[in-house]
Length: 312
Image (tube, rainbow, N blue to C red; front, side):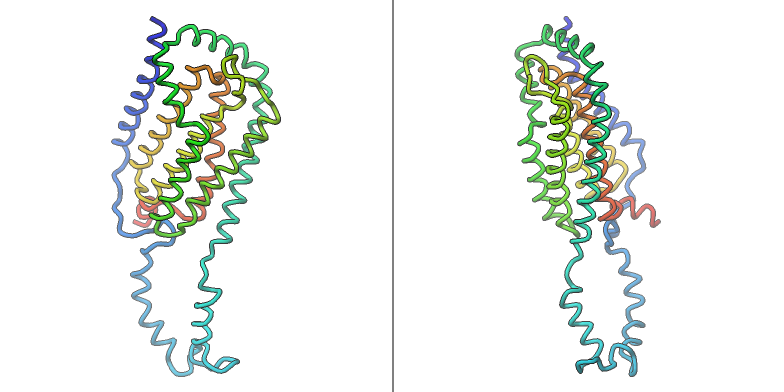
């Protein structure tokens, strides 16, 4: 009986997350419409620019104005301005933003490492009393066919699966984003680098062995971390560019929560990680995700719906 109850935890958990997501989405305010792209300096400024443009043009080309005064090398200041616009000043200013992205996410990775380093000794010292009992009970109540199913379900958190999803999303978002097309690929590539090297640093610091059936597993769970970080970042990038509504945010969070629960359940059911490693892996992924969301928000501005709602 207990083995069937253990197997029923997965559909029950996914159903609970889906129900909570739908309920929260229904209670959230409806989207405000999509008149323009405010997210990253979009189109809402055009009416004001159209109104001011005639006065600017007439004043600029009035005799004696600054734009038609001769410059140093002959020609006019207006011609010099055009040369500047066609030269260095016309280049996109992506380098400062890219540097900002690297600094914020790198600092976030360092702070995350410090937090996990602080929690690690307590988990390793006090965790085995609960972890070993959970693994023994789970192993004695497994169902062979269901274990095969959870093995497949848990592959969404594998390294190459998440990296493949991040690469695919990077290409698609680079094509579909309206502005700063470089930002999604850069953010996802930075996520791969930060997650990889911070995880290596944590495992070098602790090197905790996993359960007997999976000695390679360690603190924290890499599968849970990657699901939260990569799918969470992809969901945020999709939401902020194509929705921006409260309902869209709820559904994005609910989707990532469902994927994270799926990964945590499969890792525990198959005894690939200790329970404390699974919980710490979810926390680890959330801590890594936060600076990436903050960096994208700082560089690209508020999401479409949020910006329009505040403008109104």
